[in-house]
Image (cartoon, rainbow, N blue to C red; front, side, top):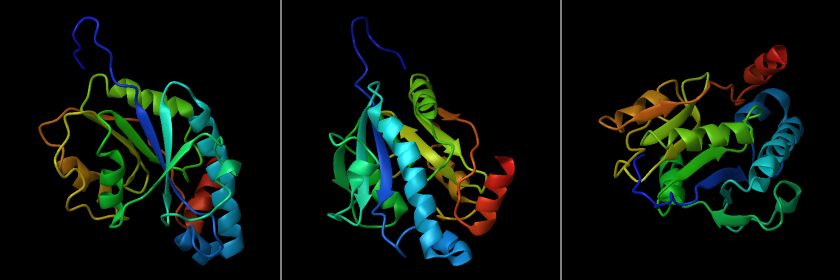
Amino acid sequence: MMRCPGATMPRPVVILFARAPRLGAVKRRLAAGIGDRAALRFYTGTLAAVARPIARDRRWRTLLATTPRGARAPWQRFVPRATRRIGQVRGDLGARMAGAMRRHPVAVLAGSDIPALRPADIAAAIRALGRADAVFGPAEDGGYWLVGMGPRRPARPFAGVRWSTEHTLADTLRNFRGRRVALLRRLQDVDTAEDLAALRTLG
């Protein structure tokens, strides 16, 4: 990203998506295989391990985008008390991500339920936005665990995306044709009991 002498890039904003940790309301596909309580334990453990170190990092400003809007939850268990929380807008995942990123010229958005996600991945995404218009963290299942965008972005970056399919990343990349896109390392997200078993095997 070219900058004039003396100009400074806006401080990056990192947005973490999180669902209120309630029994039966999180990781439903995973819960179908391991039960609601085990899925909730997995979710809260991953949320704490991922969100707290990212939110503590002073290289960026972290926002926790929560759903349902206004949900009361012990968020201080997962992020520092001073972390700003915003509600996710209504709509599908694309509408919610676009709504969260819209007001920020440099923004990185990630899920909070990716076990291997670390501050180093966020830093890599921000560095990539210094030379690219967008950055994605590919997932093993054809989706992505992170998206980052600079000021030069499509008007509708998530239009026509088939969510939760093997086409999710490819569909999104079509919306970024003509723009510079960077890819980060590939990670395993955990949506099903099979995903969890595969992750434990790798570990």
